[in-house]
Length: 89
View 1: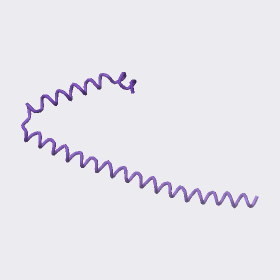
View 2 (view 1 turned 90 degrees about the vertical axis):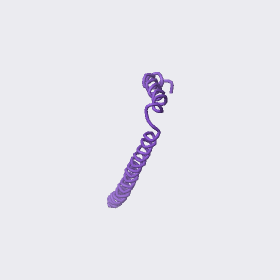
View 3 (view 1 turned 60 degrees about the horizontal axis):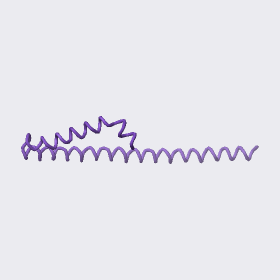
View 4 (view 1 turned 90 degrees about the horizontal axis):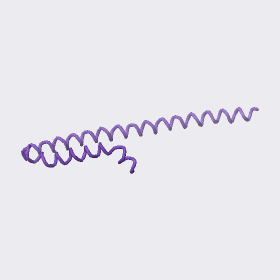
């Protein structure tokens, strides 16, 4: 963890300065209604984005599961062939 901080101190500092600036400046630059509207857009975007990510993850899990099922059938079939050939020898 210490290596992470040592290597990325400039990124952490930049993030801190930008966050602090936004926290101090936004209330004076934007109206209350504009901030509410921005939060609504942010919530909508995060909901849609998370739905897409969850859908991709679930489809990937199901495709991997189907691949493993097909592979297992093929392994059983080939191992039965090897067993039958071993009996003949």
